[in-house]
Image (cartoon, rainbow, N blue to C red; front, top):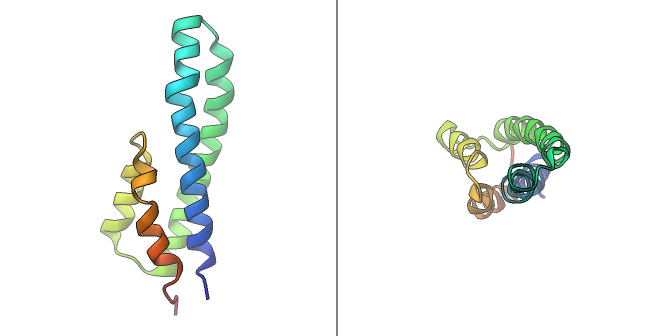
Length: 101
């Protein structure tokens, strides 16, 4: 039986990571090099919504799977670093299949 909140957290972890990369490496250069400010507004809003969802699912998954507070902090800090969420992906996969009694 899979831990559904951890599966959802793993999905939002990946999507939020891609949105962060789009913001930093596509939208921001479009704004500061080419003067297209609308790119940051649109991608920034999408990324902001995804980040809030990331935080909510992080809390839900943490409560359900009972991983340590330190791992929770690592997941959060990794979300603040470009490419960071992709390094935590394998750790999240290990928690998907653990029982959540």
